[in-house]
Image (cartoon, rainbow, N blue to C red; front, side):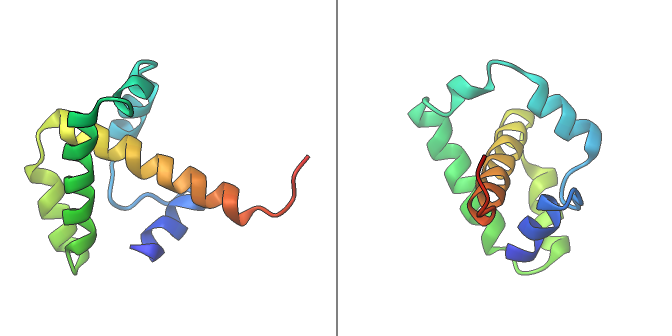
Length: 94
């Protein structure tokens, strides 16, 4: 999973289609979902299951089985993690 995050930080997103990423991230209301306990529990469980999948193909099969809301929430959470990883790795601040 760390390799996937590193690649995503460089702009290579092999788990998600670019069009779906754009759709999931364009919604301005997505931030409120991070304060909904039920939704966050669901996405946390999904992320835990995704991380637990051993191979790329197992991860892709799992993602294909998610409903659209769970999939989009997972994308937003994934990119939130990527963004935080990039910020924490950047030692320079302005």
